[in-house]
Length: 286
Image 1 (spheres, rainbow, N blue to C red):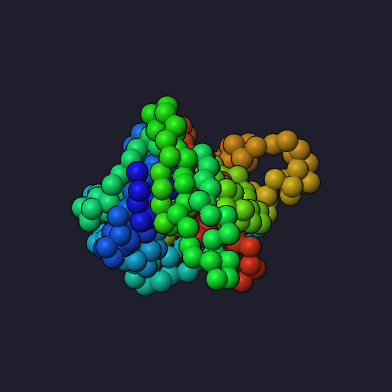
Image 2: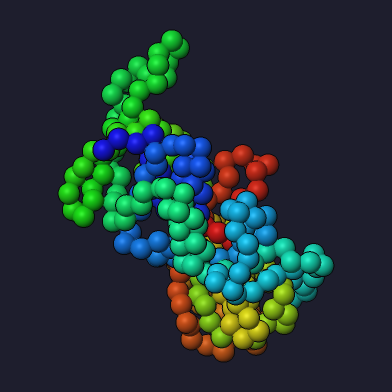
């Protein structure tokens, strides 16, 4: 099997990269290790209007649950600062439906999609390729598809396979400077204003922050990320994000008064911090 471009990972970045490669005349293969697009979810599902626009998708009821225009930033002492953007700044989305819409757009442009296909290594036909005076060489990408080992030849391989990218590792690229664990539930929660997310920096999530993101007036996504080393220093050695989430739900006066108990969904994941200090990461999508 030979392709101009092979994209590993059919999330928003992978599907968009594959689609644009196909639009420029490339023969493209898009690989996804899971059996369906957009699952399992590892994201809060709060996307800026700019992010959605760059994907060339128009907001629709198919994937948008709510629009957000600002944030309430809550200090540890109970005070809060409202930040109002006066217009829609972000969308609360179904990541499953959002991811699938982008994958469909890619397939419609001629991208070949292969599910249940996991990249397990690659090598260049000519190890000297890319050096001065040397022509580029095809890459042999090894994958396991439906339990069988196969080899795919590609001129270009794009790694869009997440925070701990196997492709980046196989290529010898640097690992993320820091990866923080994160957890989130979707639960009954009476929002003060469903047009605002709530942010809680400080002791609720040592080294990071907690949040509530309204799906509507009665349901919110509530979660946090934390820096494990700081969490341990605070006297909770070995404690997990779940420990801090439960503490946040039942100890923070503001959240406790609005949280009705129970959960409708649970998401866990990892949050990558930028290597460069001046680069601001997408805080609510890990």
